[in-house]
Image 1 (cartoon, rainbow, N blue to C red):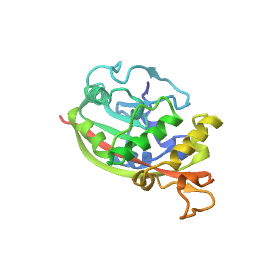
Image 2 (cartoon, one colour):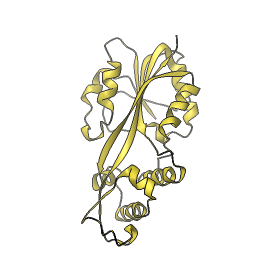
Image 3 (cartoon, rainbow, N blue to C red):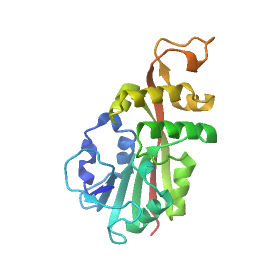
Length: 226
């Protein structure tokens, strides 16, 4: 886990394809000079001064920050409850927590399929949660959720695989998994297949390539009560 204090660079994030809900979050928090800000990141390849530490035992004093941002990182954490408690601990009274991560459908079997698709691509993925699941973790840690929204993010399948250096075997496993998606999981991900679909042939039997799919992200702004 890497921590960096670089709030004023956030508007110049170099990965527009991965921005997700960043613009909305920034419009909600309006980070300014002088605000003690912490960003949590999973090796995003950017240069700068980082502190490496444990997301469940952050190397900072109580109340050290006015604003904490965590984007598309928490699904890598082994203990979400501990992470949210640590976030609340290092936030100052009245401080804000800006959060983004992908979410799972409420239907249990569909959620397991969607989550396992992520794990097939990236072994560091631990688990995502439903929208209510993420917000429940925040409130259980003593944070008050002030607003949230859901953002759809469309991924080109080949680029999504390349971002984790998936080899041919991994790509084949991902496509095979996607062909077996339950109906509700398929509705959630909205996969696009090359060559259209023959309605008389089962999806798993159709020799098509996966072109793109959707992921849903929740963006959330919470506050530590004064």
